[in-house]
Image 1 (cartoon, helix red, strand yellow):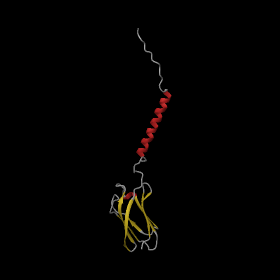
Image 2 (cartoon, helix red, strand yellow):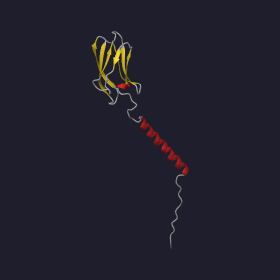
Image 3 (cartoon, one colour):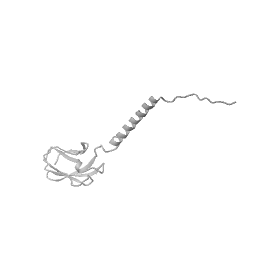
Image 4 (tube, helix red, strand yellow):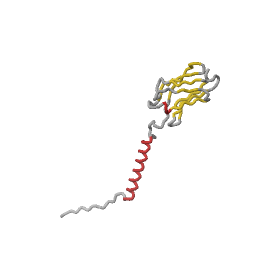
Length: 137
């Protein structure tokens, strides 16, 4: 006697549900890829670097701000905008291409008994890479 195996027909996921799932997975993967490419996934491309500086008086109404360190190695001086408030003095950036330890920013023409705020603005993000307020002596 022969046995005939009969299999019950088992249906899988309906084609409509399968298509919706595939589209949803594709959209999620595209969103993750977009975030990674745009730099929001933990990269530093959209962040303002931090510059540490020391300063000393070099003459009457003159100060030298020396870069001690910077958090990114590819920061260009062309992307740094020094801002002095009030702006009644002269600020001179270094001629180097990249910001690095030992670079000197000079400020001359400062008046005494005035509170000054010196900021290095990182133009790609608009953030302050360095900022200090002081009263020259």
